[in-house]
Length: 110
Image (tube, rainbow, N blue to C red; front, top):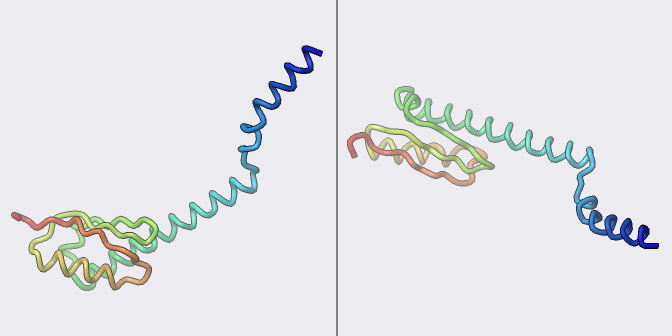
């Protein structure tokens, strides 16, 4: 009888942990969703780079780092003027798929 109670207590104690395990289908779906999001972020980064290159100029492209995370685009780097900084943000905002722009560009000598 004591042995049964101990085993029962051990099983009940492990029940919350056992209930939290993911099935392989759940893990696969989560991985698929994450891969899709990462692919979208990569495509958005490429679209922003292309827009900047076409509108701001190739010279600036080398100095502007673009990072995308779920539609939020962060611009980092150094540009020549406040006007270029503003223009880079405006161009980025017009890219399809951009929901927010974080402009962390700094102006050279500023």
